[in-house]
Length: 219
Image 1: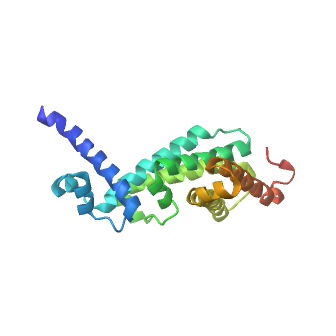
Image 2: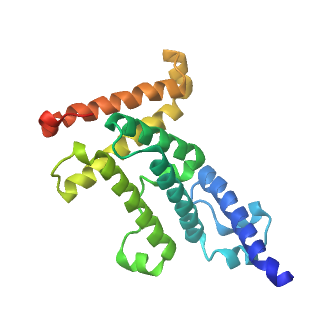
Image 3: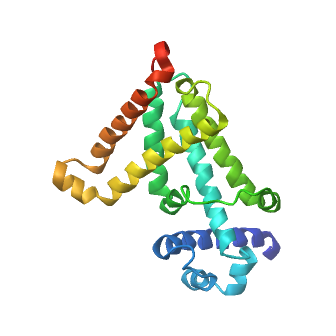
């Protein structure tokens, strides 16, 4: 019976460790959080912690993978091939806000550097899946907005995706940080302000790509 319960106990410990690490990483920063901090806050011994995770990076990678899976899931559920481009654009914006609310730490990390060298990806299955899931997210966005950006080079495609992410990420970040000021200055709630802001971003995208689209137009 004890052996049968052992995997369940290990999974329970990993879940506790991840939830605790999310809180500490967000509060103090990944680099400022030690394995000892995580063990103490989780109320487990260090031997149990190290039996589940060999180091802090392994914990961060598991958190990132969980978050990337969620991001891909909600983007897939929120967008639809053949839908109006504006509808899909707005769906992506709101999905990214939901992502930030559920995984605030990972929302910050998506614009930071990740390890992508072949050796690291070959040696670390978790890191490889994070990378592959991120590529799936990018592919989904390109499938959705491909008609808007015809005949682009690989460099231009990456620039397009980064531009979309950067614009939406920046607006969500500053609006969340300045929500009280926005309410006071404009009388708008965070979501009302974001709805208008997302609309402006879409119009900017529409305007900037008008020359490429020509007579095809945006739906």
